[in-house]
Image 1 (cartoon, rainbow, N blue to C red):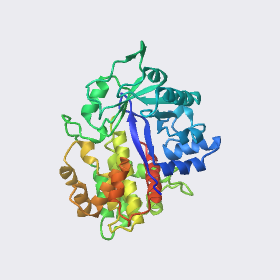
Image 2: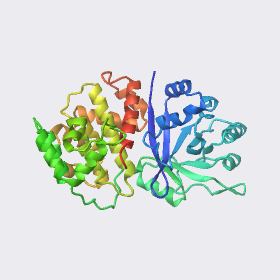
Image 3: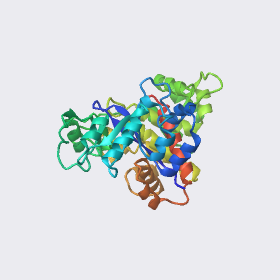
Image 4: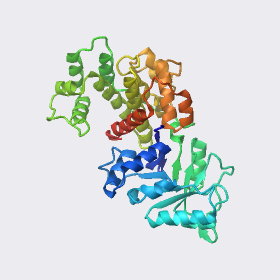
Length: 398
């Protein structure tokens, strides 16, 4: 039985994250349907599937879910209406059936996204709240006329926006939402970001990578950098770590975390120092990758030194973040040869794991199955690792 889930960011016109489009395989949907049958479960389901770190966020993002018939019969009456949009694909249905289905969904209080890429029904568009346009398949530079039967079409939701060129077309066409991996591509014409990795952080990572790391030296390095010490104590005393007592000293913090988790935490400091107004989701994806790869490698007892799998994942998007070549960036980071080889795409077990994670996070499950190695954990456990990585990444303030 297959258990897959993928989460795709949906951006607004300010390039902030408005929500996530969720992809769930059939067997996973069936499992959730069996577990969540009471109204009290709705909020828990929303958090588990979508936003494990958004519990305390007042303006929570939208969850955009596909509409299979069984979803309506079980989950739709339970999910939080304010935060859920139902993506209705009525391409194979008659206009009468589509109108009936959309009316049922809206009667439950949900907004509806319906595709308008090819010859949309004016009557369906008048009912829908969002009109989906697939820019990977749209031949024209602009979408159809915004008028249908004398009334305006709903707001446009752009799909398949996997390049900056398509993003610009969708933006110029007046789309309000943008789904696709365009944000993962370097922006041509943009100058390389000027950066300087924090010397104290690099020194700590270098010491942690030594054959026999010195606890005393690591403590001294952190204590002598106010910013590093503050952020370490803040993390250790957070609800995510949840210590039994308030941690007040650096030595206590290191003992509680352990050297491996401290090493990973130092790399998150590097990533978070690169945050800007328009790259938060890119940084979040890097954090998710790092933790997901670390969990997979640890379960599979993959041969690696320390946190090599984690470093491979979390630094795999530095070239996009900084708009610079990976080779130039790696000259400044104290990483092992195996990690550098993987980040440069030169093969090896870490490179293979990175390629698998890319397929998984994009929802390219058929390709993933073809590349799937039976030595890796079973699919349900992989899904749980992915959800754990989401929760871990959302525990940081990005």
